[in-house]
Length: 374
Length: 121
Image (cartoon, rainbow over all chains, first blue to last red; front, side, top):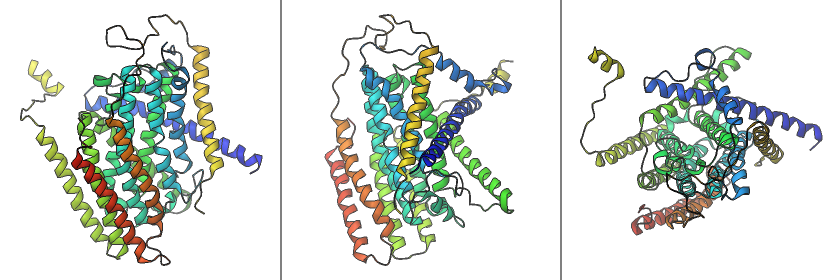
């Protein structure tokens, strides 16, 4: 390994960080805008044209804010925790391709590497909770450990089903296998489980019990402010983007499905555009869910993970392996998977009916209210 | 063939650490620092904070952690198996053995379920 090659990696790594930080910053703006549309508000609109510079203003504000250090905290653990959350978020991007050939390390072990790295975030959150010496933070950190660890299993199992189907752990190879049928058509159940478990891994509503404001007042982040808090949120939005990209690569056919027309450069450009469009759609879906669903309770969350997602993801792996081993048609796989997805949704709706008190709430939109008051 | 480019991994990790430290340093230079005794006490919902709050940890968290370790180790076995079980040089027994292995582990989950370990109390 010569010096020039290492320098090349440094340039690429710097590029990855810069691009991801930019994307993460603009995801905050997108999230606020999407939530505003859902709640019939305007969202940020004063900084720059229609609020386009809002992330910049937020960033500057966070850097110049006073960085508090609680006097009872475990100093070293408290300072290191944000770094321990940010570094795994970046490390995932060593193996994730954006298009054919644009990847730092086109490894044959890529998917396995990603599943291994994705667990590391838990450590940072527990460190943050522990280092803060605050009971809300400790509780939030432990909740994070319980939740992230539980949803890691369906996450891994749904990835495994895809790895079996593609017979490869190389992400570029997995995308190229989807030229005719994207894996969402063969494995809708794995897609649904992966997406739900991904949401839980990110700790987004409806799975945000580890930093639920109304229960543990911000969880592990309660004592953080300024630059340290900014690093936590940078990592969180990077992870949101990563999960969206992984969903696109593993299930939605990446940049090859459906095949773009034309040849040469134009074709490549359209392919990247298609990839980005899919990714943004997935992110939009994540924000949409945040805007419309209430938070789960911790016992509901654990029961949902262990009693529904874990058995179903196991079943999915077994069915996939049996179908592949005996050489049945992939349509059989699709049919079984669609049936099990229907079962999953039926059980979710059944569970929510159990807690439904039967009372209905009249939702009146702002415009209706305005008209009625005239 | 089956390897990760660890140089790239280490370089990305170094860049991540440097970027975070850079942000901390920038904040340290720019931002004000006026500590006061009351400002630096841990956050509490309106009442005076009680000293030393690394409180007791409920035992149920660690049961989930143990279950997770078992499944994570299983995943380490499952990934190589998923890569080879269709190949010609592997006998059919490999496939059935892994099904039995998964059945045993799944029996463990059902056992825990019936014991009430999975119930959050």
